[in-house]
Figure 1: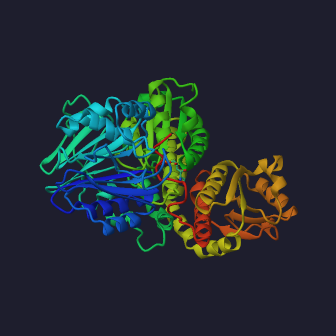
Figure 2: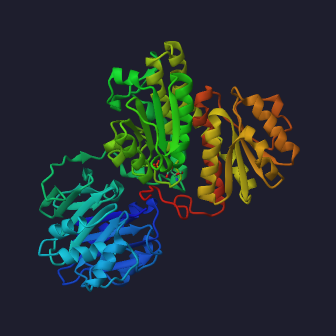
Figure 3: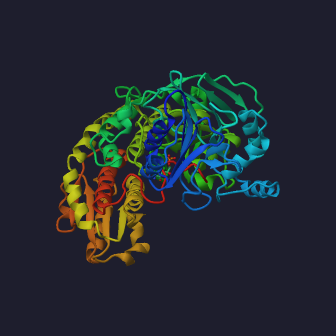
Amino acid sequence: MCGIVGYVGSKAAAPLLIAGLKRLEYRGYDSAGVSLLNGGAQVQTRKAKGKIAMLEEAVGGSPVTGTTGIAHTRWATHGPPNECNAHPHHDCTDEIAVVHNGIIENYSTLRKRLIEKGHTFRSETDTEVLAHLIEEAFDGNLEDAVMDALRLVEGTYGIAVLSTRDPGKIVAARKGSPLLIGVGEGEYFVASDVAAILQYTREVIYLDDGEVAVVTTDGYSVCDLKARPVGKGISRIEWDLDQIEKGGYDHFMLKEIFEQPQTIENTMRGRLVVEEGYAKLGGLNITREELQNIDNMIITACGTSWHSGLIGELMIEEYARIRVETEYASEFRYRNPIVDPNTLCVVISQSGETADTLAAMREAKERGARTLGLVNVVGSTIAREDDGGVYLLAGPEIGVASTKAFTSQVVALALLMLTFARRRDMSASRGREIAQAMVKLPEQIQEILEDAPTIEIIAEQFKDATNFLYLGRGYNFPVALEGALKLKEISYIHAEGYPAAEMKHGPIALIDENMPVVFIAPHDSVFEKIVSNIQEVKARGGRSIVITSRDEPALEGLIDFEIRIPETLEMLYPILTVIPLQLLSYYIAAKRGLDVDQPRNLAKSVTVE
Ligand code: M6R
């Protein structure tokens, strides 16, 4: 997804901006560019298709100088990824440069109107209309022109703009696409993601929708689109830079898989009260009475977060006895859902910026539901707009394939379930049993991680497969979906997840010696049933990889590969069974020589519909 960095200060801006862009590489992008002011009549811009290294080459070949600049990584939405469509975009006279995240929905009408007025367009992007609108409105002051332009625009944006006609200044604005200001000493930054500027400052100001910031070497100011000043507080970022680096692993994804004993511990810390068998969730912002009145829940999310939501649904229905529906956020926002004041809408998102999830949350709110965000990125839009929330505290997740966020989401959902269930009819002893099992999870994950070499051997056997089937039942059906998603997104192998018993209703036709089948079969209440499904695969010559939790005579001679995990409670198995699946996908993708952290066509945070 697109990324923005801007700098105003006394240092050479180009190296700072390029270093900032490199920190945003994990978001996924296809081209990059940088624009600087050097006191001349025109903005100096360099762009390149492909990796930041290509941009560095372009800047090396034709250096740009100056202490004020903006830069961008683009993930194509309008027009193919090429140098011309890369940001920054200019006005007709190259005096204004704009970088933009988001989508200008009325761009074709605006473009037509601007062409009629004599403007010349050089790219196919929606963004370029912004540069020309600002040019049209410019009357000596850049922020006024930006505000005039934005009033004509429909859609979403996070933008940073500079101009030779109002130098030493960056104007930034946000609607629906994250943007923040970094406060340094005598220098200021603009960024779409804190990772871009963390090496320079920890003090940030998050812009909200409808706000415009003006940043110069003398300071910053924030106002709304009507130029009315807005007071903003400074937040301090506690993440360390080495937390967003690879820490000796070949890929971020592998590092993040191995972090999970620690990250789920962080999710539980200070929240799980083991002796009492309940959870203290400080950010729910809900009275005891309101909590009591909730009689139905909607869980909404996308991708991996949706899979964790399915597990949350099972836990909450089983123990808290509240009716739960888990919905794809992209579907929820376009239907006519039944929501009432006793509905709690739980919104799950690692990034807190996923456009569909945010829109679903707003829709639920609009219809009167109370919203609760389970979000990882602190200060993200969902976290700021929800009525209450539980931060996952999993730290920055850089790999596009979500791993540690998933396990933290399931843990957070278990905590939420305990909060509700203990206020209803769950006994303290049952709550305690669950809490005691939860505290063992970090150690149990560690045990599975120590078996990574076995999983790597299995990956070697299957790295050239073209199809995979993942089967699980009950709590492990969502894990089957997650295992299949993980494999397809990073290894480009076709994979499907199914409830194991559904296999006989169709997918069984696919089974032969070329179709590896991964069974998620820990020793739980449906174990016996799944053994029959394993037999069905064996009978048709299929090869099976079985994740299970104890020596089981019933499996002898039946399976090709076994991955052993420790035993836990049925509802907690997904937190363990998903670990071998994450490793299996990782090793298969790595052995296929693929770009594990930035798989093709994917972005870490999907901020477009
Ligand atoms: O940031 P979010 O949790 O809202 O993201 C939702 C999905 O885009 C995300 O989980 C996606 O499916 C991942 N690439 C899965 O690994």
